[in-house]
Amino acid sequence: MAETRGGTILVAADAEWIRNQVRGAFVGPGQRVLEVTSGFDVRPTVDAEEPDVVILDMQIGNMGGIAVAIDLHLEAAAGRLPSVPILLLLDRAADRFLAKRAEADAELIKPVDAGTLRRTVKRLLADARATRPPVDPEPPEPIPVVSLDS
Image (tube, rainbow, N blue to C red; front, side, top):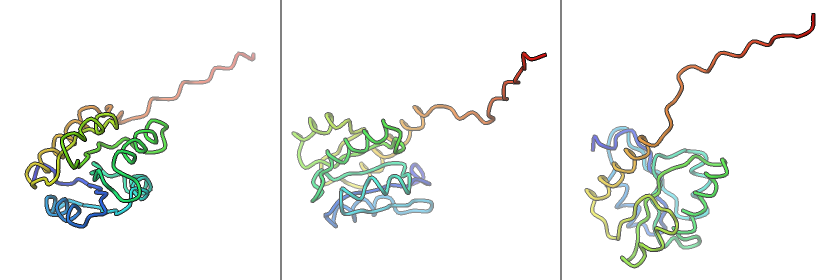
């Protein structure tokens, strides 16, 4: 589990077995798995908790994973939410087309074994770190103001 230590994972699924499967795959020191059962709860949870990865079930009762993924992308593009990698859990291979349209960063077909889930999240975290702009450790010095008045 060392490959994903320190990560916060948000899983959105109304099916308890899916939440259990994700939670079981990421049990360990420094790991946090947040769970919501409603698609409508994903946006405020991402805003409040800033997870490292969001895992969405394709079939969330009131707002499916595709709609939630699109919503998260739109909110991030508008600067209202942080950009977070999205993993969609699909019901069948034919759903991959929808996952691509929703710009999911990865997709897996259920049921998923713990090893595949961990490897996929590890890749998403590595990709996110590689594309994150470098942080400037010190802010630039202010430009001195020169008065033209004598």
